[in-house]
Image (cartoon, rainbow, N blue to C red):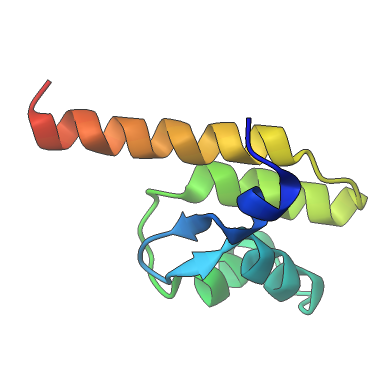
Length: 88
C-alpha cells in the first residue's frame, strides 16, 4: 500500500498525463458535470480511466477521499492493460 503522497503523484490517465492530485484540483475548480470535467483531465473521449475518475469525482463531490481505493482502481487498470499487451 502506497502513502497518500505517492498516490497523489500516480498518473490517473495516460492520455492527459495528469496525476491524481491534478485531477482533484481540476474537479474542485469546476462546476461542470462529470462528462465535461473528465475531458479537462483526460483531454480525450476514451474510457480507459473512467472508473477511477468517476470514483475520484464522486469523492470530490462528497469531500472525502479514499486514496487506497483510487490506488486499487489505477492498479487494476494498469494490470488489465498489461494483460492485453501480453495477449492473455
